[in-house]
Image (cartoon, rainbow, N blue to C red; front, side):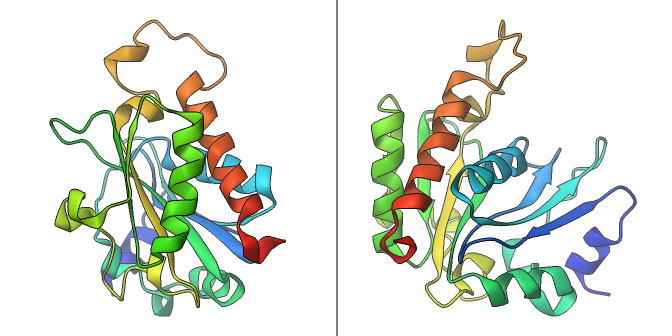
Length: 202
């Protein structure tokens, strides 16, 4: 059994595949592993009529697995998603000292990364949106050929989000909701706008 298969077969894990337009959002470290990433991907996909693939771990489960183990040969739903989409935005979470106000845009499609980065910069100017690969830590660049962000025909962009924009930093200690934090809502709107305005969607 492969590592990804073991995750998918674990009790309480939810695998989601929704096919709409040929642009897709992915969040396979969702649920309690990289908190809010699946929510952000789902809402951005719904707002832009984009496709969605997510893996959501239940409360109490935080099993990390590397992106290169996310293999469509181990998941018919992932294979179906990748056969349908042309380009993707993969949503991840990260936290590194000195980068809590940074969003990192990796992946092999650098033109798309700039397009998505411009949309985020316009919506969240207080954040440092990094699209220069040299400024992104090597392990967070998302450039490996087996990384799912690079499997569609036009590859895609991998976004690493710090806790602050996901609503889980001390900045939001007194936020009572019920809606998502303003930064999270602005990010979702920016991602949806980037998906809607990418030229292949016109």
